[in-house]
Amino acid sequence: DTGAFVSLLDGFTFTPVQNISVFNPSSGQAGASISIFGSNLLGGGSYVEFVYLSGESAEVVHSSDSYINVIAPEALAQSGPVKIVADSGAFVTSSGFAGNFTFTPQPSLASIVPSSGQIGTYVTFSGSNLRMGGANISEVLIGGADCMIVSESEVEIVCRAARHVAGDVRVAITSVSGAAKEFSTPTFGYLEESIIFEVSPTSGQQGTEVLVTGQRLFGGGMSIVEAYLAGVPALVGQTSVFSVHLIAGNGMAPLNGSVVLVANTGAIIELQESFAYIDACAITSVTPPSGQAGTPVTIIGSNFPCTGTRIVEVLLNDQVASIRFQNSTHVILEAPSGVGAGNVTITADDGSFATLKNAWEFSSITAISPSFGQNGTRVTIMG
Image (tube, rainbow, N blue to C red):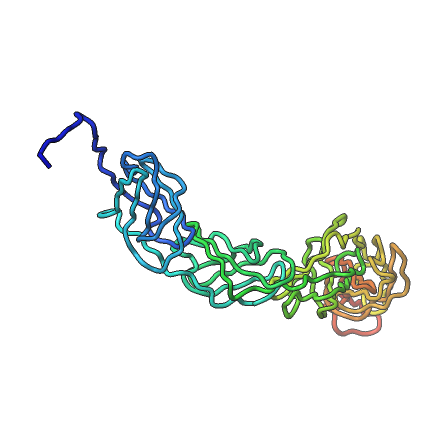
């Protein structure tokens, strides 16, 4: 207070001014990874002690003079500057081009449809602000199990559920920005998983009728819309939650694999390594290749009667012929009446069949010349 003073020459140095040039993304919600770029961000200090996004304290992951990475906290929708505070107390606040950081409105989840299911079920989540400020949604977890994203937007996500034990579970959504939210309600109910008890028969070929029995075979859905035998699409017949009737598709032996049922919800019901395609029966020749009602016809081939116990039907260009004899290589029949040309098909009692294309033609008269005459007249019949 006497006016006396003391000084130390060159005892303090002002470091270059701190500057925030840009931060990305400039908006988001809890969990978003925010990268801050600039110069002299430490302000002469050793590290960054605090970062505030619109007044909310963020978690500092990395800090240097030119780059800082933080994780955004959860906050109400608001906008404000980014403030960096170094361990020395030096601070800088974003302004000008860098602008403000915006906390987007918090995400909400209004509905889950269907509200229950199992592995494979397509689940639709409806709500608002689901991307949480990011460009897209990167992950959906149902009870911690990954749900494969099919489509996504701010208001709707469709994904396919993974396997999980039965029970009601929470849903968590993660944005590509890193922002994430776990919702306490509504929940998704994993059902007791469907079980296939038996596949009968366990082998066959194209046309073989296959019965699948089990429990909860619709997987929480209303019907079975697709089926596969060793990876080959099968025709779906009569269905219930206890049994599904299938007709085998055109699989080539040797081929082994799973029986897979797909419900209308997308739910997948599977029994691994439960069906095999065996060598198919085949028609190699039809003799004669043409005729009319009453003509004896011999069909020669292999592996008759396919996967059944006997051949029950033979079609000549879609007309039913009368079977007179059959063994493992021959079927002898009597041709029916008919017109035109087409395929020859034999069908066994289990639905399995073999076809030889364009192997039969019904004889027909196309012209008689001359069309009149007397005893001894030469007549030409064409057909």
